Length: 357
View 1 (cartoon, rainbow, N blue to C red):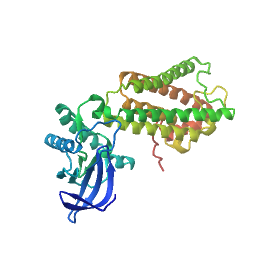
View 2 (cartoon, rainbow, N blue to C red; view 1 turned 90 degrees about the horizontal axis):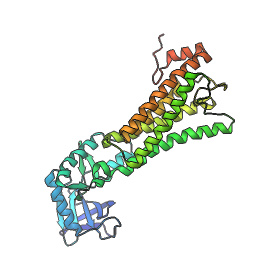
View 3 (cartoon, rainbow, N blue to C red; view 1 turned 45 degrees about the vertical axis):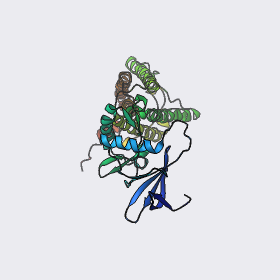
View 4 (spheres, rainbow, N blue to C red; view 1 turned 30 degrees about the horizontal axis):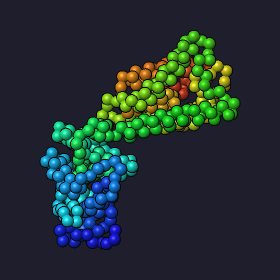
């Protein structure tokens, strides 16, 4: 900033700091000795993806329109037409984007933006839904930009985040299957054959494992098709929860394969000798790897909820459960009483029984 003082209609304001730069102007935090404000200086720098008319008049017109619709916004205090400056109320506090990065989401934000959309859409309008444009204060979410534009479906709230949802779903899948194949490769280098699915001759074991293999192959195909074509019928808050559940599944799966070390196998081993692992995450779940699979399926299903993903996810989760039942019988016959005692202490999916003194 070339100077520490800016004026609006001949009133002087001391610049405290630059708040940010948008496609329409620079926003500064300023004060006049009584309070702090936001002073926006319109700029005329080129923008590759947006064409402007009169920026200042557009801001003033959009403010009046949004105010009439009842969108919570900072109050417009003054406009200096000659210098193309706007003075508005300062809503103190971090933006939604900053709070999300800090891991402090509030589920009410989505509902509040949806309430704004219920007023905007019938009026044929969208606003800029980027999280940096919203600041919560005293339970109310404020839209701190004044910009609005004609309604177009690709840019409404439900579709605006499509690239974000796509990236989140792909991240969940990439991390999960990255862990899976990295573990297989690491064990292969040590001469261990991880994948044992379908090697047992017993008909019931072979049938379940083949169907499980088909299900766990079909599920990611359905997931990727859903992501590629944007097939989702769930609201943004459900999709955000889905991302959190999916990443939790990745973490649970990672902990499970790390704790199993070289005893991890996919399928019931035919000849390999493995150890009974009951420590680490296995002290809280007898089947954390399968739990990780289920959480990943649920997470992606919430991110891209549709009948195709639902069908394949349920099929895969059902077959994984049948595989668990088979493995339990195998482990009981292999390890005997130590495994049965372990089953008495730790639940199949999650939790421990209280030990009585």
